Amino acid sequence: MKRSPLSKGWIVLTLVVTLIVIGTVGYMLLTNSSVIDGLYMTIITISTVGYREIVDLSPEGKIFTIFIIISGLGIVSYALLQTVSFLIDGGVNQIFRRRTMEKKIAMMVNHIIVCGAGQTGSSVIEQLTLTKTQFIVVENQEIRATELEETGVPVICGDATNEEILTQAGIKVAKGMIICLNNDAQNVYTILTARGLNPKLYIVAQSIEKGAAKKLKRAGADKTISPNEIGGVRMAYLMLKPHVMSFLDIVNRFDDELLELGEVTVESEAELSGLKIKDAAIPQRTGLIIIAIQNPG
Image (cartoon, rainbow, N blue to C red; front, top):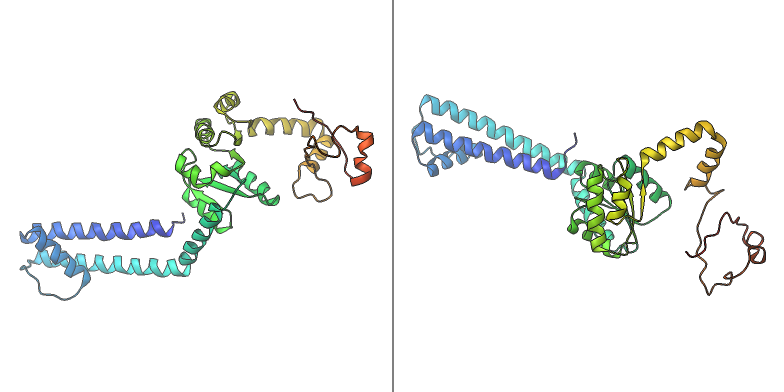
């Protein structure tokens, strides 16, 4: 498992503190000295500065000192190794990349917030990237967040149910949110939190358990999607109506330049407003094909 530079730093710090505590307690017991004297003996032994010993060491004390010296050298070597690894692996570049990304996130407006970067979330990220849509990912797994960051995806590592994290993701100026966390309870709580911060936000949520869609909508989701149900229906249609599914696959491809399905809103003051389809002559004027018309209400 790949650890972040911060977690490696905590490991080194923990090892140093543990060795100091063991050394201090050990000298106190072996030499019957005070806490200060035990701490002093530990520090000069670990640092190998060569200062004079302030207590007389018994054979057991000398053996213990050898143990402290070897352990101290081992920890120092490990710390140097991690420092070099941090520089070689681009740790410094990672810090600058994170700061640049934070500035980019702070400037986003009318973007989409994706909560969760699991299997479903990864597919969402892929489609949004293909359509060149502005989006921010909120992911609580540090390793997964780091992977996304390394590929240039704007990501915030944190809990999507936390108001501060959503505020950091710019929820008050976002236009939509896609919630695909690991369980329905988290999805519901995230919807409630998001709806409280931005009542106008358009929310699409993943439902996992059967019947959870109603709960998600009551919580404030505009639309719900069940990957399990959609997958089952799709498999049945692929068996029963393969040609229909082939056509729908072409229509739903975001990266298909030959056939693209789109949606256009005709405002009341627009030139096409009130015209019949035959009078509008859209296919003749634009080359587009009208599949359906939805009237207000």
